[in-house]
Image (cartoon, helix red, strand yellow):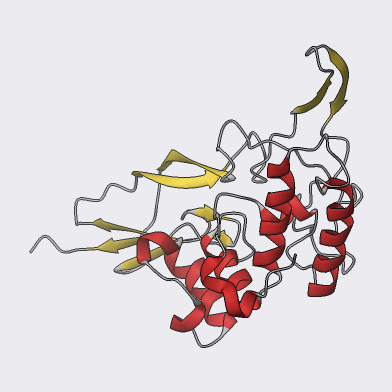
Length: 251
């Protein structure tokens, strides 16, 4: 039975820790029609009445993903709040921003995320010697920012737990057929242009695509009371912010 989302929204459970797009095997740009098509295809394959060997939790997850992504309001909310969403930014929970209501235009949101949230401000004084050391989020080197374990394996076992076959899970991304590109030529939303993806989270960054590290810069030449250094702020999938050195007088 398909739930009437408009009437029963309060009864739908949204799990921000589930990758609904991957569950339905679709991309962030999939249309409602494509989502429904993917859902019906998976339902025929994994419905408990048709396949008694399938864990019912799998079908429940498929239905849950469909219920969320086929509702415009819930999909927008999921895309913002879940790290698997299209427009997720890790600072939303800290800032307690729950919708696009605070932004009149999408361009304003992108500007906010890229040029404000990811920027780093460091206060310096007249004793500044041209060097600085600070913490910043950088792209995960292990997964190259995808958040996926590209070296993970898919192991098929029999009822006695004996290994039947092992598949390399890095042979190609299903969504772009290994090309790394969408139909319009942009990077694939699922594999981030790498052409391959893993079913598990990257063990280094835990699926976030970035890690916190220490940054050291030397021989910095100040330009007035506020010096901007490009690409030395926090990294995120939306872009890398700036580092600002703001001079504060000792007097």
